[in-house]
Image: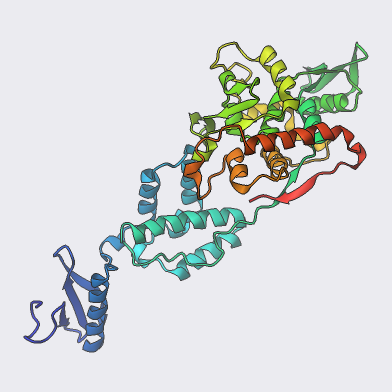
Length: 445
């Protein structure tokens, strides 16, 4: 019996009348500490009902400590990110940026116990109203929902998660292009095309362009305002054969392998000589580079457990890989398969700059094509082999409900079927009408 209550009256909690005439409740929590209700009631019956609800929550283990609910969202979310197990470095960077940019300025000072679905709905509406894309708003909402789910279900700080807005966490990915086999080989050749010429700065800070044509060096009649303008003009001349070109094939094998083995950028850039077995026709994926927002490159595990895998290589690209190994890769087993300019890891920005990726894909009629779209192309070719979903997920390095059974997929059985099917695609590409080949758009999940 609580102190202050009369015999045969309430067995849980205490009600007292304040000088104002209103009623306030107090009760002992599961830890033996007395809590005083933050609200007051006009009628004693209302206070009794409030105590009944609190007691019912304690009995059903749904009670939350109102004092803990006073912690601010910003502080709790920052701790949540720092203590979340298994987050990849780039995921930590993304969560930290989303919290700082899109959550804290709006809700960071709010107490967890005071957050409501209405507040969350208004926050999302403000994000979208301020020009934040649906995709970014969805990412921010999913982060907030995950943080508050932990507060509700693990830490029992709040009774339920207020993130209950239907569809707020959904992203509708835009359709991405899927290249034909002929386009993949064209891209692999174009990323290595280099026009012969040079750019010289003049006294008036303008730039003069010289280029080679039919083996003879010539001076461009135009004077360019910036070096970048002159370099773009030289590149365009090389593309339409107004300037002689050389062919740097160091990235040809990278494009082919990334496409037809469905590799991510971080995976293909982390490959070592020992990961490639051309006699068996396989490539082993066991690590991946991740570039932090600070520019730091971190070598770690692939994106998921299923990312550690062995993938079959179509025989049609094995000659290109043998040429690459003989020309550009050191003999040591641990040598990087696709090193950067100074022998270290190849960065995506360095690859884009050296290959003039943006200009190349625009020249091909594919403006906006991303390197990751090569993986989508390989995935589509694999899917067309008729293999089952589990085998496709294993080849692509995706987790599913049976991920524990697919830790590393040996290249035999179903994956051999997929690889052979891709080989048939490549071999049959020469029979296609080049004028009729087209880019196919498919949704990317």
